[in-house]
Image (cartoon, rainbow, N blue to C red; front, side, top):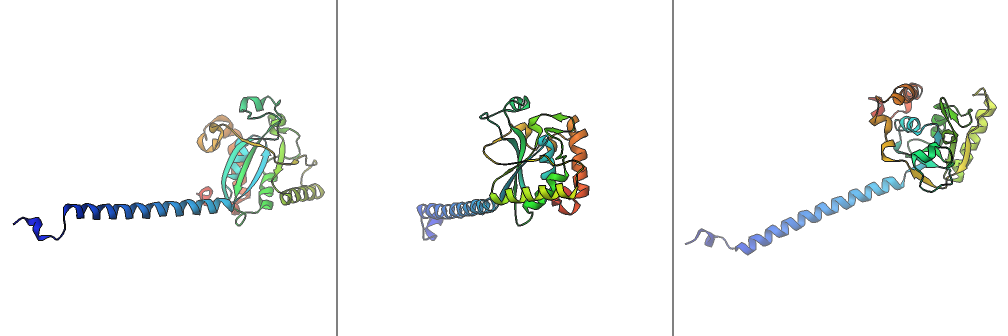
Length: 226
């Protein structure tokens, strides 16, 4: 008698059981993937966006990437009149765009007012179309607001700073509604993080980031503290 005769099932039964188990595993994996995607989408839907320009976007990005509550920072261009500008065109100053960063943040962790505080303390908002040796309208100090509340908070904060005499000269930061934002080329994203030894990063970005970490030590992300 064959050994197989001792078992009350056929090879077809075995194959069926295997397929059932595989299908069940795949369905469970698919459910987990969907739940993870839904969780990510829900988290992202709770984020808010701020758009700031404070000179070279490499500097702005490097600062805000280290702030607790900030989930993502995207360098790009806003405020111009030319569609789909590239870096070379923006640098001519003829497209009207400013180099800016869109900051995606969790309002439960960091408020828009706190973002404004970091913004105004990490660049010179009193120099028109200039930050240090970076000169041109593309380097202007600007806040592009996304909501009436952001506009109200930005204008109130600016007025408070001017009245307090916090700066020797009056603040010239532009406060305008966001219209179209264009992401900068891939090589501009996370520029300081990817190119720490580059000359501009060493002599301009790094000192600014170091100063930020010193002044805002209590607001750093866990990664920035390491």
